[in-house]
Image 1 (cartoon, rainbow, N blue to C red):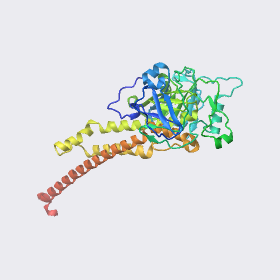
Image 2 (image 1 turned 30 degrees about the horizontal axis):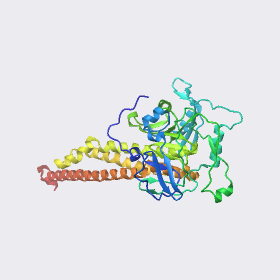
Image 3 (image 1 turned 60 degrees about the vertical axis):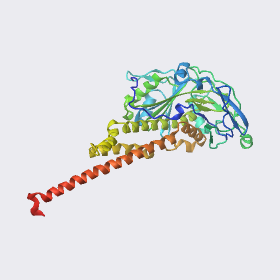
Image 4 (image 1 turned 90 degrees about the vertical axis):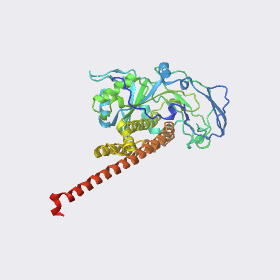
Length: 446
């Protein structure tokens, strides 16, 4: 596919892109703000009930996106490319042509590709997955995925699920241990799928000492994989692919006729982040669009993908609203009313503009999945707080509120336009009646 052309108009941006917002994924109250006189700029510290906690920014968190690309950190890329996907056809196509085993979770489809990617089977196909490696004496990766879904997510993220409070711009969660580990840039063979499982925890400890336990992480031989989560509402979330591989997969999917009402490439909404796995950190976190996870888990990535997909879909709505409201014909309407008192706008054009804004507002609040909690988190409640933390980092609720306010103001403005057009129509009808009454040819009918 060709490169993206710059979209017209300035798109709305979330503040976490520019303010280097930090979100800690476990939960515990913060009782004291960060001191302003820290000597080391890398230090991130705060007070909890358990005492002073000190953490340092990793090298990746201090980099910008281009520097992370050069350093080899793995990508998380979200594409909004169409209004809907044919999910059954997508599953059949990927299984047949890309040599993968799609797994459906309600409106989401999780797909794992084994690296390195190979050329497609036919001339019209770009790539396909490698054959999963088989190691004697170890469980197949797909078998471990089944077991993880049976057991549920058992990571250390939500040992004490509470709502993360916010104070003075810092979001904290559960009591965390001191850690000064700085992760190194990942290698190409670093695992992206679930290759760690939580160790067995004694039932007595779960009941009496859950807040103090340290969950053992069993190291399993790494798998060289990359993952995708497709959503029925036209969004795809990629983990661990290069940009060229992402676009090759999207091109294969588009050529298979899976995308409904496909967007022009210049209108695609794309969100780019990076991630790494670091089992030795005290807690997972999101900082400066960089995700640091304690261990690989397809359920964890699925929950993060839900929040990222909703944010990217909302960004597409924001871009559409921006295009409509900043269109020269729309901007000219209040100027015409202010300077001439007349409106050079046909009733049909006014109704079309009203319909576009009404459809956009309906999609945001009623039709789309931006405001809904996915079904996954009703059956896997341990993942809901992670999903909520990512939603908060992406500022979804605040952005929906701002967008609705903009559309509400625009709707009020259009109501005034319709009143003006109705008055003009009534004035015209009045003159027709007057002419009908005074015309000599029609006096006999009066």
